Image (cartoon, rainbow, N blue to C red):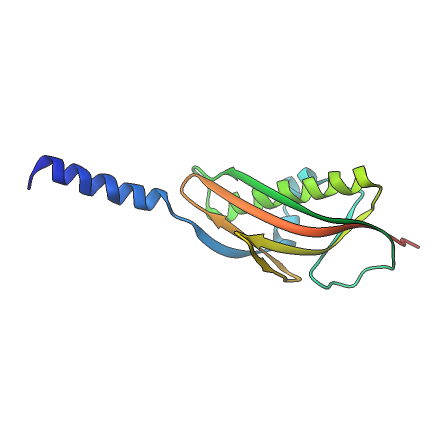
Length: 145
């Protein structure tokens, strides 16, 4: 076989494997039970996914999106996705505090424009180099009595 043809074949095969974009669902509870993840997210704001029950909304500050990516090199897809999730949740926490809220409700996944709602899982796309999570939620102040 011609050396240049072999090179092109190998290069295209490796580029295809680098372009991997596997989308999967991961457990919110499992991610938040990891000490490093929950510490990175921080405290002071409550999070409610999909239509989970929460206290009465006193004030609404609007819908916000958090799109976070993380380095997936030498990590499992699950580990990389949990870190991207932690970063997205931390951004929600910071936004809620900035707006005067104490909760983010109706949190949904919005991976590549595909909005999905689930009480127990989030969607993440993982490739050879990066993993990403995009979440959408409503920042609110709820009655904590």
